[in-house]
Figure (cartoon, rainbow, N blue to C red):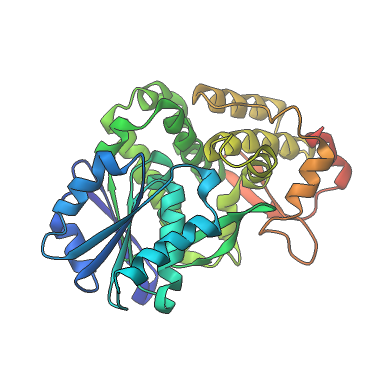
Amino acid sequence: MHTLRVDLESRSYPIHIGSGLLSDATLYRPHLAGAQVMIITNETVAPLYLKALRSALTGHVVHEVILPDGEQYKTLDVWQRIFDALLAARFSRDCTVIALGGGVVGDMAGFAAACYQRGVAFIQVPTTLLAQVDSSVGGKTGVNHSLGKNMIGAFYQPRAVIADTATLATLPQRELSAGLAEVLKYGFIRDAEFLHWLEMQMPALLAREPAALAHAIRRSCEVKAEIVAADEHEAGQRALLNFGHTFGHAIETGSGYGNWLHGEAVGVGMCMAANLSARLGWLTATDVARTRQIIAAAELPLEPPSDLSAERFLELMAVDKKVLNGQLRLVLLRQLGTAVVTGEVAPEMLRATLS
């Protein structure tokens, strides 16, 4: 097991990464607020891992909510089911909510924990690569709206993240590739050496070689923990973590939630951001080609849906959390391994990329 720490003073917490951690009671015990535990999971993950998690919670009053699986269910209506269960079971303020699943489960459970009785204890147990390297760390929680992804939510940090890498053995290959998009993101924005390592190790990562996956997860979490510790509420550099996401969220919303996996849309979004960075003179044509080759090697798509016009993209991108004072800010690359947030993009250049 490897343990990192997200340094947020009194709200600091550990990220435990390793194989076989799911049923280790010693990892949960220090972070359980009281006797009552509500596990939030989904129909896919529950048959695989709910029993193992419950075995680690012996001696506690454990209930669970099993949600439908998919981004299309990340809605306020489905989210209400968590409150129905907490209230029906008469859970008090010293209860603990545990998210067992991928990014959708983690976001919804965390948002519920932030709101129930104005905030209760919360633990993340991510079971997908995307959740282990990104969504479980940093305290972003929320649900989607028909007009924009993740536009309703809260910053709410977990008490611990317990990432059992053994759960990746049951992950569909498409979901693995989607997770690799978020791993690649860290290389593109912050660590050119890590990006080169990913380039060389992509066959091993796709083959799920344990040592390669462990390093990729650990380095991704290190980068994210550093950025979150410096900028918890995305007032500055944390926005860099949205590289590819403004384009990607537009793809997800415009295509209908659930038709594109989040990581697939982000992969295309990173290609589009690289294209725009080159138009600004920051990347070379060779850099853009290399970006596309790396993303293709992760078995991710390179082009957005053909039925999303430039006008529709612009309409969707206008509903983005990085819009300030009516100005869209984008995360672009000065060079591979160095990202910036800028609102100084000429409309004709953005439109050229979208076209």
